[in-house]
Length: 100
Image (cartoon, rainbow, N blue to C red; front, side):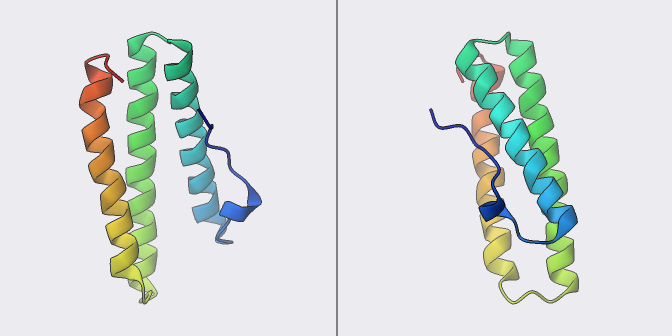
């Protein structure tokens, strides 16, 4: 399994957004490692919920910035966020049941 790892190529050069992206990468990497190592379910769930909260906070912040700046690709980018939201919702029951 290839681990999520932040690199400079992921930077968007907006410091707050880059920091949020780094936090999402970090939480994703922790989740991958917890799953791969067979960590206790409660630990995996804790990381998953932290990842979801981190992503949701980031999406809300980024979408506000895009709306405020009248970002031309706002609808497309928001759809990308919505796709991630949908996938996270599909993944949660698998983790919650111990099948992840």
